[in-house]
Image (cartoon, rainbow, N blue to C red):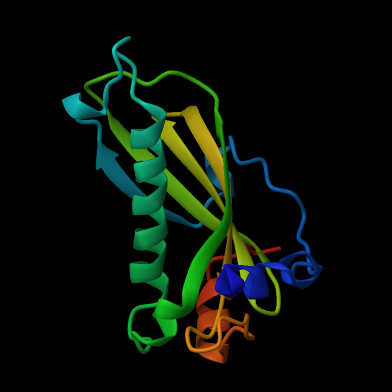
Length: 162
């Protein structure tokens, strides 16, 4: 419990640098994209894609952003991240079969944390959006630490051009 508390207590002060709020239901808000295929096993008893499957699409988008923007960084640098908060809004039902597009964009960068905006789209239709706060921490001490310069530069490359 102490590990979690030590890096989460300072998170609210860490994200003072804000950007213009993006409309996450608009495809043009996103910097990086990947695709996923809706699988039959993703369906709930009503024949709609289950929210757990949609959350997996969001994770796939985060992994893609990391692979695309942080390629070549020391793998040890990338192990110091944890999700502090994940908030999803489900806008529309999704059915099988489908191929979805997952967009990701860095909306804020703080001293030791950052916020991603994400969207899952079926064509032009927005299925769900998410805000994800991640914090960088020292695994040995459990304390949040400043984002290393190479990580900060990678995150900045995934922000919208103002």
